[in-house]
Image 1 (cartoon, rainbow, N blue to C red):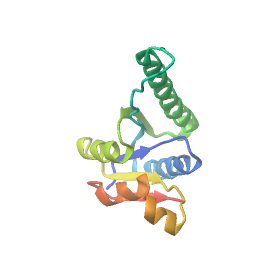
Image 2: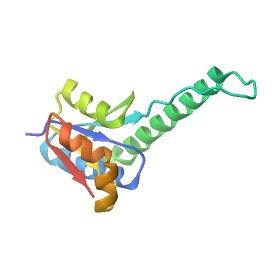
Image 3: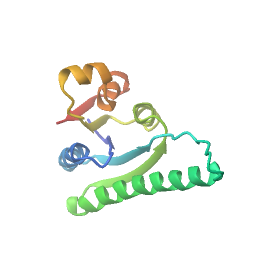
Image 4: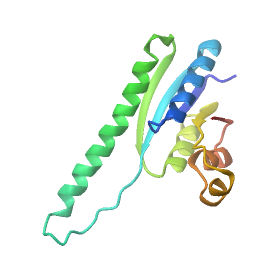
Amino acid sequence: MYKKILVPLDGSHRSMAAATHAVQIASKLNSKITFFHVVPNITPYGSKSGEHPGAAFKAISREFEAMGESILNDAENEFKEANVTIEKKLAWGKPEQEICDEAKVGQYDLIIIGSRGLGEIKGYLMGSVSNRVSRHAPCPVLIVR
């Protein structure tokens, strides 16, 4: 049924709740989990101070990537004893787009994602990654609150 489960992680409490839920499901169904973090694209900027913007951009990019890898490693360590196969992947881009693309290319059977917990009006006006993923994903999406 659900042999490949994609779990997007952003380091929040809700994404870790989704990971916990995914591990519980995977242990019962003998599924494989992929923890997935998307580093948002950042735009290089110009500086009036004369500082070379390329160096700052590279430093910020490296920091964002390191934070993403840390999120994935922390999640993997949290579930080390779970007796579930866990892989980690990191991508750059718009989170909702990269999650849906990964689900399609990787032929995942299920996405388990944490909700952002916005109120109804704010969530309606702004939207959320989990909301957009649930509308555009090529497979079922389970949103964990």
